[in-house]
Length: 207
Image 1: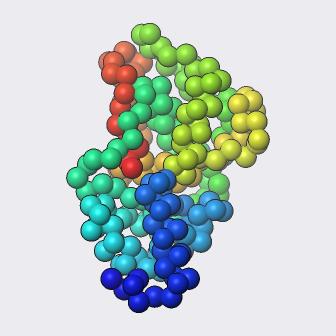
Image 2: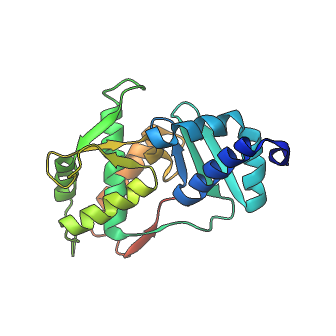
């Protein structure tokens, strides 16, 4: 592979970026600690595609949204989410799309924790899981690890705490059409509201 002929510095940049993708699934241009990795991957896209193809992964580079995503070709290695985590992921996607419609492509999408609670409280579920601070914190930490969100305020459990949602939320479950995505999310939430989704776990986030 071409990387074998590169300098030690280039090899180190490749190693760091490749490991971030393997560990975090997404690299985001607008995220400060992954911006340089995003630029490096875009500049060396063919090399990364070749490398991950050998490992059984597909590399998707979306320069419109500034996201690099890693997906298992065989559909294995998906992160299995608990039901409440799946619901919160869908809520975040819905909030992202709603906010995105009001902003330019370059604007950041920022929500309040209270907005998540409002959406969650609208759901009418049988045996509805309790969205307490412990569950909210663990779920938000999980999504933060995968570069889907980040907290702006240090205490992000306060109702007025701000959460920044990255465009990687659009690729956590693939869908090429945003309109279809909105319909899919609303349909999924409606099924939850009717108690139609009873499984405790769902495979949602790609890994």
